[in-house]
Every structure is written in structure tokens, then in C-alpha cells.
Length: 435
Image 1 (cartoon, rainbow, N blue to C red):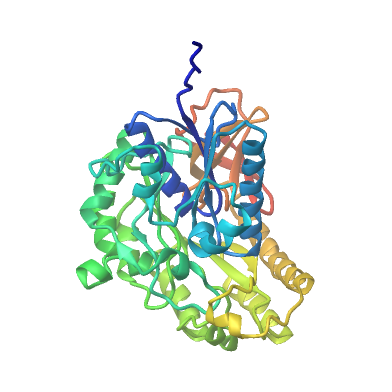
Image 2 (image 1 turned 180 degrees about the horizontal axis):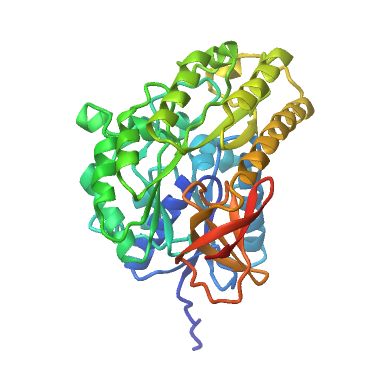
């Protein structure tokens, strides 16, 4: 009697959405590997038989990408190229009931906090002792480090609390242990992420403890850069700026989503802050950390936004001259308080407003980059592409900010730091030579 040859499972994890999802996928990879299961992230060899799609459910475009990716994997299963398709992440958390009916070919759906249940599908155990054990999906010299989960804010446009729950901080000890593990794996830059970084510690220490955490992290030997992402402006703990100024390995960089500047928009968005508060905060940040790079994100086309609001935002950018800006068009999300408002601005008008605002910022970015010509910067080499090296200064985060283009015949190891003198500057990139 002929027996069927059993193929050992190999899992491919596809990650969509933000860096927080990336960390979740890395943790899942680490747990599967520790249980003896072969796993790859974004496996290009296509020699896997099981797929886990980690979805995003933040805004319409992200949801559409997630649905399309699931359907592509289901089609591969239908063709016999996959045995199982599992779906996790924010979209699954938020729409599981509907998706079960719409895409029954998916073998199982999981929410954002159901890692042990995913592991059960593989007859694997969740290993509590694996704090910091992750299979990095990023190049080995940088990593994202999630310091908390969820959010207690009630911003009217945001569905994240629906998908990620209330704010829960990790302990300082947990974060430091994870950071030390990452450094031992060769990581030189850690990007701290959370739904809201500045709320860190309130739930467990009864005070905002980000400054304490930063002191502990900056003491880790071999950790060259610590970068702060997603710092909410309301009740911003200014003491973190003093730590940033004092500690050399904390990048002079702050990602602080503002979303808008006109008072009527800030009120409608339930941001709990005024235009004047924001301007005073930015001035305070710059006073405490001279030369700091401030990055922000904005929303165009929120319900009720007027031409006056758009002009107000453009004038603010011209006046305050933020270093980096990204922009989203408003997405009308069910079960948010803004969903009760009329989504009264057409999609093409939202896009036009976003473009108009970014044109103002593009000019500011060009002018700020021109000021860097002739100056020297410490640059972290990220990759080699088309015969030239691409790196970043401490003022630039991965994928969202400027890159430094380096033309050289010398071999520059990926993940090394070099000093670069800037010779050319563009809207969003710099070009220079190794000093």
C-alpha cells in the first residue's frame, strides 16, 4: 500500500498596515520558530503551504488592500497551491462576523490580541519566556519596539480603540529586556512605537513614565539610536525633551501627529487641544531641543472642513515650518463619533486639498534641505540600490522621511555609520560623499 508523503508545514506571514502590525508578525514568527515550525515573512520563494495575513483596518484604502490580499491567498488555496489561509490583525478584529460570511474559504479568523489562539492552529504553545524573541522582518540593524497596546483617546475619526482596545503599557523591565535582546541580535536603531507614546506608564505607574523609560533604554550598551514615533500633543510630557537633549543616543526627532490646526476642526476631531496650544508646544519643543526634527501627520477633508480651514493649515505650515509632514484624506469609519457627521466632501476634493497642502510642505522641505548643503551628518547605511548606497541621518525615520544618497566606490557595510558631507539637496532627499 502506497502512503502519501507528508510535507512539513512552512508558514508565510504577510503584513499589511503599520509598524505595530509588523511587530506583531515578528512576535508570531518568533513563537512559531521556537515551536519548530518553519516560518518566513513575505516569502518570495513561494515554497510555503500555509499563509497568515496580518491585516490593517485603519482607513478605506488599507481595508481594500487587506481584502484584496486575502482574496489573492484564497484563490491560491483554490488552485491547490496552499493548504490553509489564516487571517489576523485589525480588519479581522473589526469585521470578523461579516468576513466569515463573505470569505468562507478562510480557515480561521483571529483578532489583534489572539496570538495564543493562532498558535493552537499549529498545535504550538505560547512561550511566555520568549520576551524579545522575534524574527525581524526589517534589516537586522533597526527594529520597531512596541511599548504599549491600545489607546484611551476618543478622537472622532479614529477606529483604532475599536480594534486595539484600551491602553495597556508594558513594564519598563519588559521593554528594556526586549531592547537588550534586539541589540544582541545586531540592532543599532530602535524606533519606539505605540498608539500613543506619551501616555506610556499612566496605567501601571500612575504617571507618564516615558522619560524614565528613555533613561533606562539609553543606558543600553550598543544601542546607538532611539527614535520616538506617535507622540500625542495633548498633555505632552515635556520632561522627555530634557532626556532627549541630555542623552546622545536619543535622536533629536519627534513624530507628533497634529491632524489639523484650525480650532473648529480640532474640536470636531475631539483632539482636546487648540491651535494656540499646538503653537506653544512646538515652540517649547524647539526651545528645549535646538535643531530637533519635528514630523507630523495631517488629515484633509474631514466633515465640515471649509476652504478657510485649508488656507489656515497652509498658513500654519508656512509659518511654523515643520520638518516632515505626511497627509491622509479623511476616511468615514463606522462606529466612530465622526461617522454621525455627514461625509460631505467628495473624494476627489479631499485628494485635491491633500495635494495642495503637500505642495506647501514640499517647498518647505526643499528649502530646509538646501540649508544642509556643505554640512556633515552621521548617516546609518540602510541598503545598496542601483550601485549607490542609501542611508539616513538621525532626523529621518525609515520609509517615511529623507534618504541620503551616497555615491562611492568604497564598500560600505549595511548597518554601519559613516560621516557624509551633503553636496546636493532635493525636495525629499539629500546626496553626499563619505568624509
